[in-house]
Image (cartoon, rainbow, N blue to C red; front, side, top):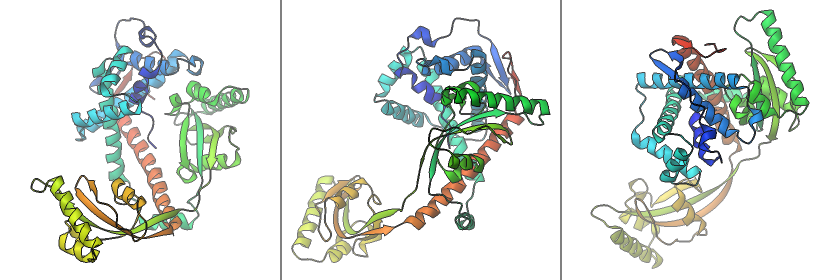
Length: 432
């Protein structure tokens, strides 16, 4: 599962009723807080990122950890972001200006703004547009790097799918969990393990005493999603670590389990919600069509005139299949009388779906236009199919893919961090 990005946090800033003075830290002499390979992270960069998180929690500042701990968490994110961007650059992962513009447009649309309004809102919060745009570029580039790494390393065979299903490894249920991690270092001493356990137990007691779980995650969790309140989102039980799924099955929504020991530390799990799977029934349609393409030679008006004439011939008694073979510009289907076979409602796009829904079985529809030309569609029949088995196979493939993708990319991140030179100059912080 993709973790929330720093740029998403920044993108939300403009929606907060915060004044410029609240966002910007007090003026200090800029300095270097971390050196990594040939790059550096400046105090001003860290302050801006911390201010962004602080602004996000402006209405609930008590959920944030002390400033020093918050700086440590944010700095670690910035380090990993820069390392991934550097690896993307060195391995030829590219992102064009047009693609960045498209992402900015999507962010604006998600917040019911146009790009100009987004720019104005960001600048009103004291964030430079160039810096914001670079953040969007870097985070999008990292997502593309992840896709490339996962695609090159993760392969799912039919045999693996068969085995997962055979062994009952595909659950039809899903869980929405919260997660807090108290880490223990590699090669930890008994004293370090005991200290981590004591901390986890103390956090658990505070939650039982009324401390909000999300607030506890922000303050105490060492997991990458700590600043998101430890929210793991909805996942199939198969996509979760087995220990998490087992704990979740024993809990009722809203309950939190006692800390449990894992390979990398102590985990506290909260079940937010759960939901069961269901039978997958899909309505399918059998239809045939005729297409008259538009081009530099054939205008939309000419194509419409021609499709109207073809419809008149069919209404007048000519066989649809014969007309399709003679006149349709859709080569793959013309020779079979325009037959599209059986397909789900959206199998051929929105306009075809609309035409199907506007028709009844056996009815010849009215002509409609798409980006490729003018169409004539006849809906022949409708059926409801049980696709539960196929859905189970798709789910199994997704489960295996998600599991392998997370494992591979986490390993990749550990690799690039171990290979990098990192000198953290923030008090009370360490490279880890």
